[in-house]
Image 1: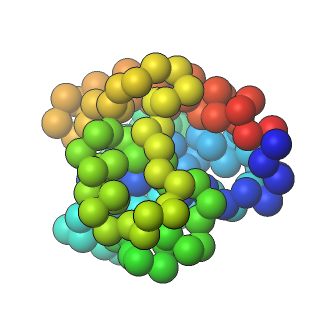
Image 2: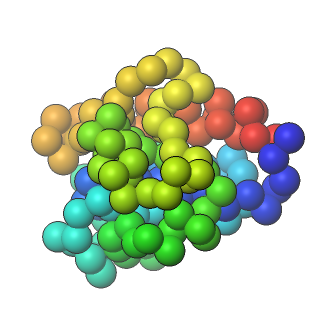
Length: 144
């Protein structure tokens, strides 16, 4: 069993769609945990989540408005107990940066081996949110 103060980082490419959504959804499922998000790229540092991602999240009761994009740092590998990548490319990028002992997993691992498609490119923000909600519920069940 993982303690309720578990520290989890959600990671996508730019930290403006998938990972901020995953942060909010996981926070709703694991209110005692420390949840954060970041991107492997630094293009959007300091910016709020992408408007359509915030709108999709809001329709389902999640507020992303206080989040700001940041890039993964080497300190994150010590700070977080579990780092969840939104897709295989993010996971590969994290593995290239991480110490061997880092706990890296795909976000969709508990519901099947796959990627959360990037809605920035697919335009399917509701579909990405549905996948994130299913996986977040499964992570919460696994971690508590």
